Amino acid sequence: MSVDLTKLSNPKVKAAIVALQKGDEKIWFPLFAPEVAFYDDGNQMKFNNFFKKALGHERFTHIDKVENNGLHVYGHFHSDQWGDFTTCFKFEINKEGKISSLAIGQATD
Image (cartoon, rainbow, N blue to C red):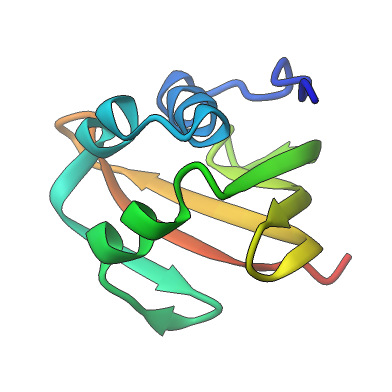
């Protein structure tokens, strides 16, 4: 299933979402700062451990909206482990152009 990614206006976020959709760790991991802060439903998690398991098993099925200059992505999501739900990914990008923070969680709207 192809997801319309035209709403993704931030090039770094778009690259990350494309890598997520493809389950491509060779593209995904280099987009992030070495000390990336990662939160899942408000709980700080180990970024590399989480995404080594998630890539290829989790993806957006529809992008609903993008906010905050392209840094916040809301949509329908599929996880092989957790099923289907609405989620948000909130990215922060540092001055070096790397993603320095990612907070994901279930969206309520």
